[in-house]
Amino acid sequence: MLKDTLVELFERDLNKLIEEIKLYKNESDLWIKQGSISNPAGNLALHLAGNLNHFIGFALGNTGYKRERDSEFSSVMVPRDELLISLERTKSVVKNSLLNLKTEDFEKPFPIKKQDEIFSTNYMLLHLLAHLSYHLGQINYHRRLIQRESL
Image 1 (tube, rainbow, N blue to C red):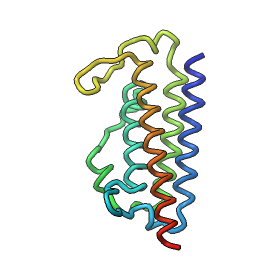
Image 2 (cartoon, rainbow, N blue to C red; image 1 turned 45 degrees about the vertical axis):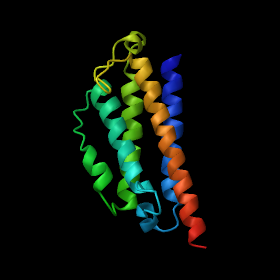
Image 3 (cartoon, one colour; image 1 turned 120 degrees about the vertical axis):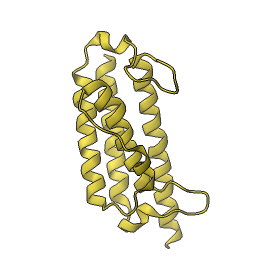
């Protein structure tokens, strides 16, 4: 069933994201901007938590989440423990929100427009999963680049 697959994949990638954040040797390295890298791992983690809490928690899970997108990119030096707690909570919100959907909900229009268009819930969930995976790859690359530079 699509719902079970989506829960499994979001959970898998959020667990990988949590692991990536833990793998940074120095907490301050999460915030390093280097060369053309303007969004370090810390900001990308905040962005992913905000994005998923907004589009899945708020829109589908009725959590009442209030997104502050600008702060996802402007915050600096948020402690690693805070990031990890936020990501664990996000994982729980995503899982619970998706598990509470009925099969027919996946075919319904998504309750929030994306770039002034309305898409199906299926489409938006696949888009959000791809967005998570894209930024997860960026974080992995950032971590390896920063660690290589510090050798």
